[in-house]
Length: 224
Image 1 (cartoon, rainbow, N blue to C red):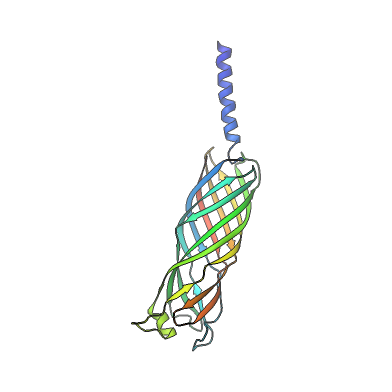
Image 2 (cartoon, rainbow, N blue to C red; image 1 turned 90 degrees about the vertical axis):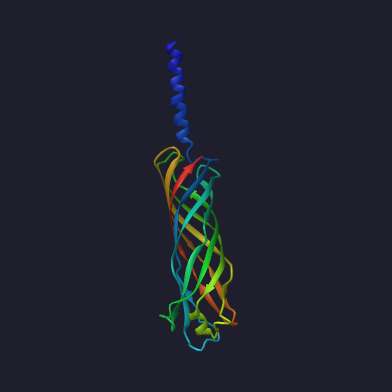
């Protein structure tokens, strides 16, 4: 009887160890929640048909609640889909019009899909990884200011409206997952996107902009 009980205990222990070993292994899913900061690295062209040469724009950083879903295709290769609420960025004057302040607000939603290679074994406490993929940058809900209208010939009755084109861009990623239990871990990621867009004004003017943002994400991960 005692031998039978010991065998049962041993089986339970081995089952627990097996469960630990399967963390982040092929076929498992990970869901995360955290925050992301996007820092655009802006290179602006000149506003077309501008009365002032060197009329450029800059775009401020933005932080938002974020999440994501990761599927382990193999023990080392994962497919990752980040999720987020749209990021609200300020568009400000730069170059010859630096100091004019905010010209517009625009919401951006980077829709990204990456393939990741995770180093180490599924049960490793620390798993650094690299990723590569594609981002579709979606811009929505632009809100222009009186400063933009004054700069481009708009008026209170007919204000200048700015929109930005949605664009694709290649994406690279560096990350690290630190496990502190069978199911829970912390994830830190730095993502670089190379993306260009074009802003259009209702006055007929346009401006080309390289955004090329860096995104920093920190999140709590649950593995199931």
